[in-house]
Length: 217
Image 1 (cartoon, rainbow, N blue to C red):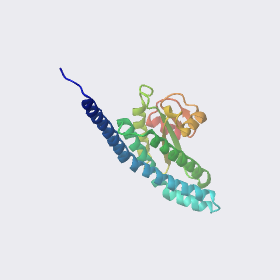
Image 2: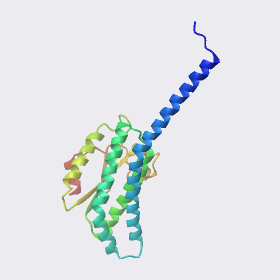
Image 3: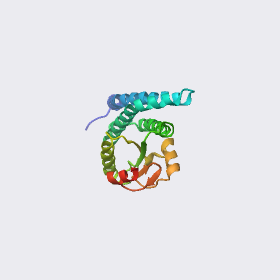
Image 4: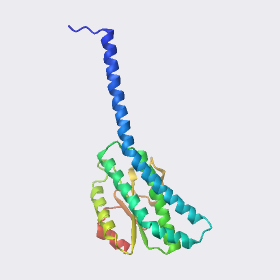
């Protein structure tokens, strides 16, 4: 018969605690390693957007804003899209993903969307805004993966076109956690996933690349 002494209890407790805290420390390290580059990218893009907003709100000539926006548009587009793809990959694979990073990204997207609308108003830019509302809750959006592919095809189709499109993606199931998503829910009243909003026209269904093109054109 094995006799358990206080020494054995203490050794077992210490060993268990070391394993637990080592795992927590490794998890924190992996999370930081994965998250920090994305946070830096989001902060950098947000700084660029903020500078453009300051220029727009200053007494500078609007032509200067339009000239700078037109020059920076490709950078804004590639930056926000690349960050979104990386976040989507991390979220789908559940690799040390921090939801707060996603909400920080939504702030960037929303600021970008407002800037694009201003460019349309005062610079006579041709920019079509497309908002994609999806859900990551299991079983709530069975066609969201397909919808993402259709939007990817759409973006590629307009890459070399004189007409510009901007695609902004938001997780509708996070409306209770993100003020930005809650604002969009109140503004557009979406209740199903996927929902595609083309220039403020709400389509609460799956849409093919061609169907979205038809609404744009």
